[in-house]
Image 1: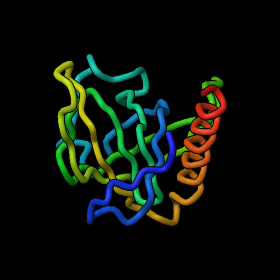
Image 2: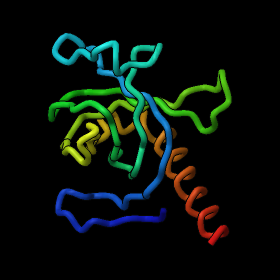
Image 3: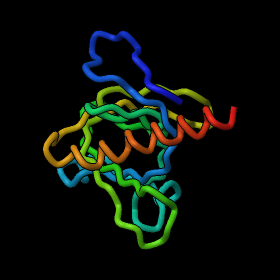
Image 4: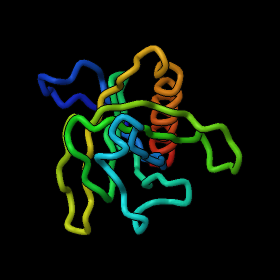
Length: 140
C-alpha cells in the first residue's frame, strides 16, 4: 500500500498504508465512561479493528464502534495469525473519528501516548506494512 503523506498540517510523520487485524480495548482511565456492548466485543472483551495506516506517531483504524475524541485506547496486534503468538501492544489517544460507511464503520485516527514503549511495536507494524506493500508490488 506504500508510504502516504496527506499533507495535513497535523501530520508529523510519514504514513504507511496497511491492512492488519487488531483488537481495541478502552484504557482503564476511561473504562467507566466508554463501555462496549457484548454484541460488538470479542471473547477477550476487545473490539476487532483493522489497522489501515500507521506511522511513528499513531495509527488509523477501521472500527465498528465510534470512540469519542480524547479516549485512551489499547490496540493489540500480532505479526502472524499463529495462535499463542505474543501480542504487540500500543497505548493510543483518539484524535478524530468519522463515519465511513453506514454499516456502521468508522475511521478512527489515533496518536501514540507513550513514545518510549511504542518504538518496537511501531517498528514491527511499519515493517509489516512495507512487507505487504512489497508482496503486492511483486504480484502486480
